[in-house]
Length: 298
Image (cartoon, rainbow, N blue to C red; front, side, top):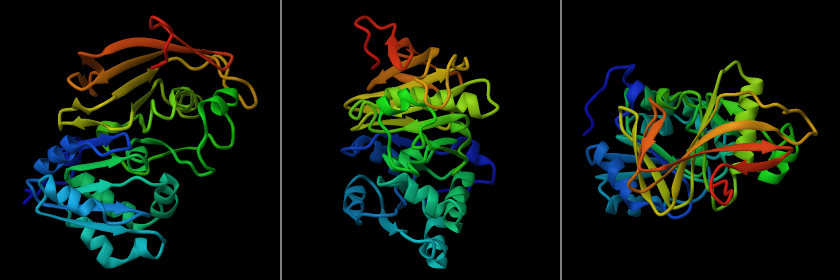
């Protein structure tokens, strides 16, 4: 069973799994259940089934329960809230992040999830469940948006960015994104970072973007290791865009990127890594430019 932690220990969660969607990464769930002492894992979602239960049981959990919370009424159910609060590890499944932010955001479910974070309970999410973990989130309130659409108009109505659904201190100032390379989301992420710089009182904006079948495992110290088949991208924008306004293609310069694959490491506190590849991106009149040989954004 998990040892009790005092309030404030959530500054450094016992373990945090950031997964990019698609096929789940077995090694990441083994790591999460080990961080939970092989205890009871609670999966929360707003749609789907309890298919995670047998899968996570095989990977080290003593028991698993899935809570499908689809309505505001269900998000206030005392039994549901009690089950969340007694989890030894918590997993947010994929789906539509607006179902989470729009339905759970103003409800006791969000408060129950936050109580686990404040106690340092191992935590994680995939796809939409990853998207809601950072301080900043693409909310998908008005549906998704492609890179081409966002780059052409950074203030398109679908570029909907929210903040503080959950407060995970190690992810402060960070936006988390999923299905990254598979769905060609680099362009829109550059827009998201530009919008954060324009619309919030911050000096830089950061992101962790993860491709499918890949996960970042975050230790209490902020040290990150990568598992899976593809890559994790760590981005930092420290200069406000030259052009970022409605109806006009984006122009922004010198966004630092660090690409890390399995075997590479990254330190969230120092924002630097080893074993990966560093390069820069810029956007000129809506067109992404890269310093990599061949000009790839990825």
